Amino acid sequence: MNVQTPSAFGTIATGSGLTPGYMSGFGNGFETEALPGALPVGRNSPQRCPYGLYAEQLSGSPFTAPRTTNERSWLYRIRPTIAHTGAFAKAEAGFWRTAPAHEADVPIAPLRWDPIPIPSEPLSFVEGVRTMTTAGDAGAQSGMGAHLYFVTRSMQDEYVYNADAEMVLVPQEGELRLATEFGVIDIEPGEIAVIPRGVKLRVELLGGPARGYLCENYGGALTLPERGPIGANCLANQRDFLTPCAAYEDRDAPSKLFVKWGGALWSCDLDHSPLDVVAWHGNYAPYKYDLRKYAPVGPLLFDHADPSIFTVLTSPSETPGTANIDFVIFSDRWLVAENTFRPPWYHMNVMSEFMGLIYGVYDAKTGGGFAPGGISLHNSMLPHGPDRDAFQKASNAELAPHKLQGTLAFMFETRFPQKVSRYAAESPAFQRSYAGYGKALKKNFDPTRP
Ligand code: FE2
Image (cartoon, rainbow, N blue to C red):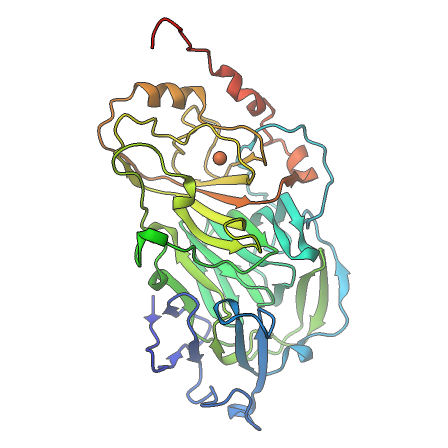
């Protein structure tokens, strides 16, 4: 892997061909060019750009957003985006839903799904999105869609961008190559990729079929959470985020561009590849992050910190501390707390919790039923907590230091209640018996034994 770090003086990172090369950092003002001298120096919009390129700004925030949240990049491309597109026609959205989408009446309860097998039919990334839940309202730029994706074929001369949402891809099985306008990102299980709104890409398989989770963030861009008294290090460190170096293709071929816009899928025909950005600079760009580089911080003596301590990225809302989405992971770590019930405690939450398991065993559900590739949903103000097996083990365990190893679970947590899709409600993987798992927890109360 080629990782290049731009210096404070703006060293230009170069990429060539559609192969991955990365720059390190989070929210930097990156500069990168795939041909020497392609990036205009000292100005954004010269009268004539080098190599006959067009200059185009991609604004991820309003022009007037404060500096801390202002996001935009300048792209120097073979054709401007307006030349890629014409009138769009409605395309078949399959099982991809957008909030508000109240289409299934599932009784309120803890909900869980087995891993859904990868279908055998040919499915591109666009065809393979399966919505599990939606929350909020995409048109109001708040909430999220939580999906599975299945990919059994690479997109060929097909491209997509999402105008409704920033997309977080969480691979669970199989590797993907994300050929984006900004450059190429390869991801595997254990890594995530974040594709901002409006960024075009083609999704390719790098090996066998792929399955993973997809979060559409309709709200504010994901950013790093404040660390407060933790200080300047640990949790997700800026240097571990990787943004691609510029890479482009000059390819004339009949092609199709899909656009997720207004809760629907649209398409138009092109006669060339829109991945034609030869150079770019700015702070609005896709990136990837290896979740195994997350440096957890937790309780050292007793008790159990709130799971917010494991936040990787957060999409803030207008209410301080009330996230549109928190992306939280539960990864390898030592448990050392004395005289403490170490698994997650029993809980009811104003936020709603969509969980997935990338690999291993999640420590609150040792009784089985939450397998890698599976999903649990603990909705707003509905109770949840360790199953009977986990409770009994943790209540009677000898509290020596213990390492949770080989495990990676995650949560998309949102302030909005999540609506279950019809696809999820009717899936054979839906575990109808899970709703009653709490009833297995027996009364242990004995007034004679303090
Ligand atoms: Fe919870």
